[in-house]
Image (cartoon, rainbow, N blue to C red; front, side, top):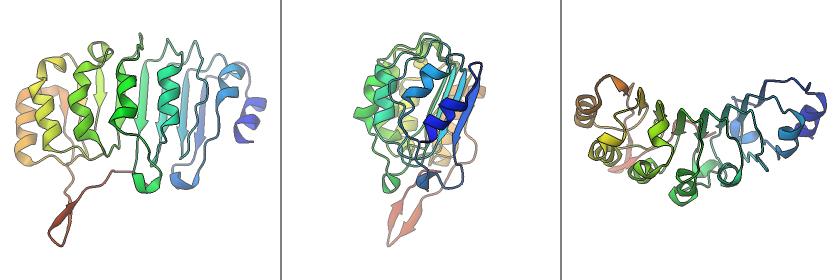
Length: 225
C-alpha cells in the first residue's frame, strides 16, 4: 500500500518524491509506481531506493530526474524505461547492484536502453554494476551519448578492459564535461592512461583493490545490501 498511500496524499503540485531506505536497501521493496505518474503530473524529481523496484508503466511529461538506487535492481524497471515515455528526462541514474542481493540485469537487459531516445537527457549514470567491463564497449552505440554532458560508470566492477574500451573509443567521449569512473578497479597504469587521454573531464577518484583468497581475486560493487 506504500505507493497508494503516497499517491493519495501527494498534492497535485508535488515536484519531488523520495521513496525508500538508504540503510537496508535489500530489505526495502518499492512496489508498482504506475499510479504515481498519473497522480502527480507536475513531478520533476523521483528517487526510489530499495530492491524489487517497479516503475510500472512510465508515462510522464514533466519528469526531469529519475534515480533508482538499488543493491539488487531487477530487469523490470529497465524495461519500463525502454518502453516508457518521459520526454523531459534530463538525468537518469541506475544502480544495478549485486546478484547475491537480487540484481538481475545484464548487458542484454541494458542494450535496448542504448537505442532508446531521451531527447532531453544530459546526465546518465550506469553505476554499481557487475558487468561494466562488458557494457562499456557498447556505449559508443548509445543514441543519447552525443547529447550527454555527464556519464557516470563507477562504483562497480569496472576494470582495465573497460578502460581500454574507453580509450579505444575516446572520440565518442571527448565532448563530455565529466566522465566518472571512480570507485572502480582500475590499475595505476590504466588510471594514468585515462588521465592522459581525457584530461580534466575524467573523474578517477579513489580506485578499489580486489580481495584475494586462495590466489583468486574477488571484485564487488560498492552497494549490495
